[in-house]
Length: 561
Image (tube, rainbow, N blue to C red):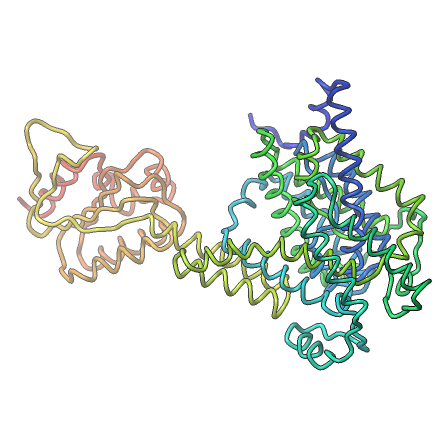
């Protein structure tokens, strides 16, 4: 009997054979990943439209929950670049309170997906949709960082993509050369660091070097035009208490769309990250448990002032590459961030905004997957390319909510179309080749002759949406009115309600025209469905046959041969 709930956190199974050697490896990986996560958490928080400490709080709280309750041994959770666009848009439209409620709702939706065992289904979202909106997010993130990267003096930045670039062009004369230099050098440092050392995160090196450089320029060279985090935000290094927002039915109804977007994107990104990690460590994550863990994290994070979180591929890979093999590494990463938050957070006010923009520009480049985008655009069917481009442009021109909603509709339509294409309907003329038959082998006969005034049609594949219309088209193509119409269903594994409806209509239409319908080769599963829908009464028991020779003999009786 299938269990009602598939919730088996990897932490508990990992502790059964835990030893000192594994702990030391997890300890080292957790410390390194915590340091790697620090600049990203600050950058993602600021880019999302919240204060820098909220990004770190998200990494601490959500990261801890995902490691404790998640279904992957090595998944590292926290704020990610994919959520920047969503979070910023929700804050602009609904405020911080709206973001908190939407994130809580998303957490509930994620838990629901896991409880309903839908973890594996999420992974079947078509690849063109994933690539399209991921590349679109990358372009959007890059676009939002232009102002800070070059230190532009602008009163406000338009939210619209096209208007934003128009404003950048109009203010190109307001670029601060010192800020631009900090931003560009930061990008260069981050890009070159992997060639020097894969262990040391380039973003952290860039932040340390640029922060020190800017302090020296301000104190000894009189350069005061470079904006820092402290110039824009007041830094708070106290961990806030949990606060439950006021919930009303009207607010909940208004935030269903954003909440679904957060949940779907969080599910996709976390399961993709867990799948990639499985391939590296040779393990198998539990998709349903992972979704429940992500849901718990996204309920806990907003209660402490955090933003949406999910599995982060870059930090997860950093964890694996540094020896992390159990969720203990993820817990240690959250503890390291907590210690930094409590004791070193005031130093964050000296970090230049241009440097953080440089960090996000490199993140956007990594997210863009431009090689995959170009390969897909050149080598795939036109339908896939169309979905790819539409999802991409919807993401950057409108927003991710529209793109994901469109993407999910496309996923359903593409699935329906391709499933319909798997069913073949064709007419058999004159005689039936028994050498190709699985439902009939008798004597030395090689052929069965089809009597006059009898038509034989064969359905090969599931009989559901699309198959019925194709059946009617083929019958109309021949334009004859036989006395008997045999429908071979030996290769029909199942029939759904739409197929039943179409088949019933065809039978009734045939009967009105004086044509008797005989079904052949019906398997037990399909026959049970037919009987539940009273087809034995509609056609008559004698007209539902197990084999084609029985169906042909029945047809001969009807036409009088």
